[in-house]
Image (cartoon, rainbow, N blue to C red):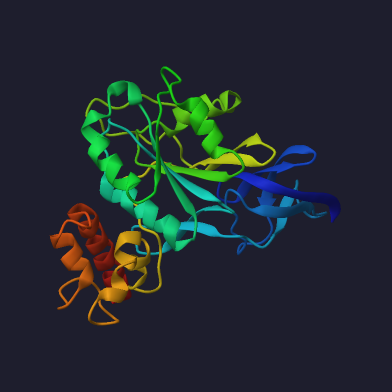
Length: 294
């Protein structure tokens, strides 16, 4: 094999990938049918004598792999080697807070930090401030920005510094517009919301954008649902810090916080120490894992 080198996968298109190498951008095929490469992977590539062009030969060990459950209940990879989930919401389309909760849970299950970015601040965020305060009480950072006026963009850039940040969120919240505001050279595709305020998918594959030598953003496709894969039903609890922190107070060590007597979590919900909506979010994720495990 003619010498190639190593590089970072900026985007994956099935059986071909775009690699940022020392030589510049290289479009590579994949060696063998079993090799599955995702955005963020560090790879070894080269020029096999029998191939028409360069190909990825192997993947270097991953620090982590961010996945979601697909429509068939299987784990679907999104991106690799991520430091933080940057969860984007907006006043329009109406925020799906259950989806935001699942992203937060996904970050917790991977031991990653989570950052909430409220885009389209210029539309007014009064209607969602109560929900943002709920997240702030969980020690989650919430930043409100506007791509139209650039308000909050400088603060956001500071927050993203020194990290590989995966931008996630429902369709139409303006993630690609955020990419353009943060990294103008990216020229990410944008689209207006449809008339019924249901977002169109403008990003079809996760794409890496380098901001500085030590920081990057990965723009993931917008979704209408998300669930982090987990092998154990009990994993749902670990995605909700306020629930997990009270679980040791329950009467039974294996309490699932559903209908069991002596459940400290349900008592905290009744006493308004835990958000009833967040608790319902936990219940929905628990039931999903229960269904997949059956």
